[in-house]
Image 1 (cartoon, helix red, strand yellow):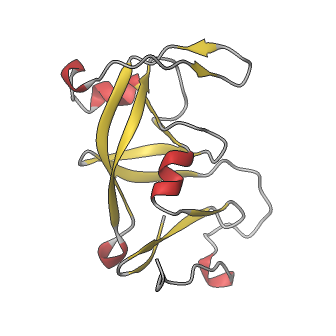
Image 2 (tube, rainbow, N blue to C red):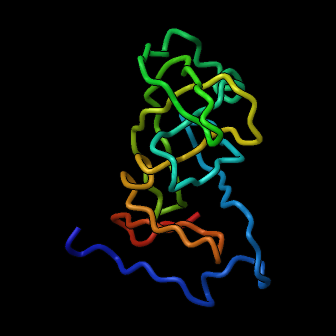
Image 3 (cartoon, helix red, strand yellow):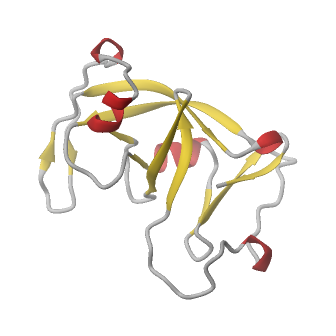
Length: 148
């Protein structure tokens, strides 16, 4: 994007917190026209994960799940077999700085404090800049800089 907007973080971009913290970056976004909370931003993940409980609440049914032969390896080396892969729209931002992309999510049936993990595939698709100090993500859109 030659004329992409400049993405910068300064005092104006700070969220309400002024203290040093080490919290996880968790956002809310729209997936397949559902507002989804507890979306963990994980630049260390090579996959985008939709947890089965959240998938079931979206009432998309197993019909939309495509079989996959992929294994996921967790932090402690445990192996997780995805239930399948699903293609869904993800929308982030507001108003003229909103952006929507069609993404592939692996659906996994394991307990999690989160509904979704957005990894490098989505972060790269959206051209996200992550700044954990400000607890925000920003990304270029045709209407300017989108943020969550």
